[in-house]
Length: 414
Image (cartoon, rainbow, N blue to C red):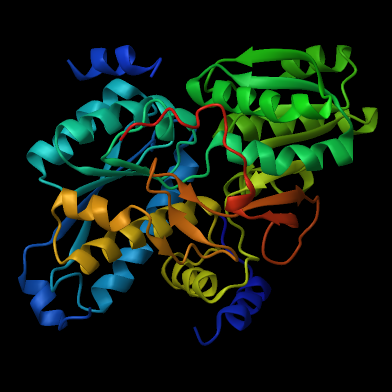
């Protein structure tokens, strides 16, 4: 975990001062403040978090937990929720749906959690979503971006905090076209996540005349992208799109730099990046134009308060994965506070259509029809030098309400 320099800390302190086709597959796998003394004495509210802590997404998952813990600390310092302390129970889903199901089962049956949240891999999110509905538990997906989660595979008990792949593609594709032209090669991880990103890129690019000159599928967890980028180079693209995330993306970007594709005037980009990718890469290896869920340069009151909380607890500037954990946990706990209960039907009703501070400039709300969080998507350009708080220059903030419905629209029947 990178620690911030004294200069960065002073900058930060100044800034923050004062304030489905999938149904068969899942079926098979499933076969107001109070006195602190009252919170300490009462039965805790338990939130179960599933994250891939031992997979190529592990670094991002740690950040997810950091953000969630900061949110819980803020509530507990105010006396908890409904006079009860809040506690987090962590579980590793290892990016494997079978492991995710076992972990979710333990959290619900043995640990008696009140709410489930987390997951990044779509395969894990899908199976936990079905399990949560079966067990009558609210499930808030923090990282998975598969459009079908709020499309054909939606259900009444699942809400999705992350912008889906279609939203991300609509935000980023116009900037790729402007910067790099329209001859693209894709490198895609062979998982639901990678394929969802690839499909979203194709759907968003085709109306603009984008020519897709090739695609290389890579196994999840790949570390050597030399052959994939050599194959891309032979097709003479103007842009290589990485439909990857986590350490897969870190390794791919290192290979892009090592092979000096930028000197061949071949650009690079993808739908998802952020400080959780930029830090392991370092400034020298970071390049391209990316979709960003959040960035530490977002200058709103809620964002500043969040940044300050992460710095005080963990001594590092937050990433977008910290943001997802913090903001999602905050919405769960605020919903419990509003309805005065941890009962699932009441929480679902409290979240449907609810507008809240998403720590961004535009509106944030859970769409009642499909439980998708409608929100800003940022577009950032990675720089090979320090830019104060963060590795990315913000090119655009695209309001959530500007996105046109993707191919999955209208398939959700809650």
